[in-house]
Length: 373
Image (cartoon, one colour):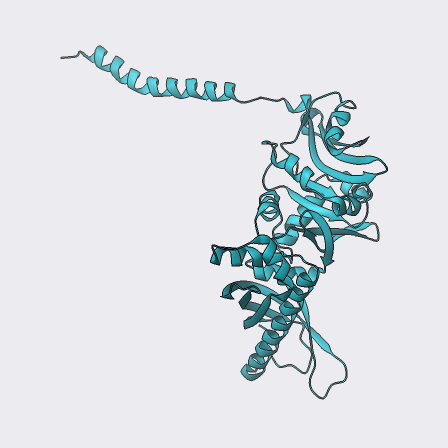
């Protein structure tokens, strides 16, 4: 039998040995990773890409952390023969190494985006330090002009936060690095990105850019962005102004609708060619700011308004799809949908007949809240 002293030693070993192992493992894990002191690196937070004569212009907003966590923003611009040479040229202007772990936004100038953005996205995807949640945008002018607007130079995350806010609480479909990678390389679908414009020395999300392959093709309004968001998933918190008119009125009125939540269902009627697809949209809505002649305490008027909204969304979605077919862009991913239903799907054949794609749309709207309630 153990005496009291031996028993105590055994209990001590049981207690301290696991702790010792945890300390050793923690040390090994720490030693395996690269450690950086924030004062000894340059953290790139926003980048911009533009086309210039005989080359590429790259802009970078960098955080320089000073004493007691204070942060000073630095703005750098480099010109190079090609995109891949821009980072080495930027490094020649810096006193510390670059790090991309805090990169939140890549902004493309419109001219740059029209020439193609695949090489740039490839470069960003290959960098393991860049978060898959980083955002992209396309400026309606040079990216440098947008980044030079004072509010962006004082807050390196302003644009990325603006895009993310418009996705979470507005009309934008999701467009982070993970989604962009999926849309760019996925078969039977096309890329889309937020469109950033200037208004009175302020910037705003002014719709989305639709790409053919990796090249800027056309734009749609922030209003149509909500329709695309409805087709791609839940459009919660999106809003739209809907026109309305009584039969005896000469001038249209309008009201504001907020999406409480939505679901879209796609059914392939025929794989074609040309293919045929039925779309069914279910939408829960909040309605407010209705014309004075509407009585939202009346069940009959609410039911009538729901049917008007159903007809409105059926027509508007048809118009959006027709616009996409006319411009040979497929942000909804109809090609991918048909591919999933056929083992003989051919990308070139689908593209040749994409303009003939037949779409039927049905909508079911339920007003779950009104301004009066």
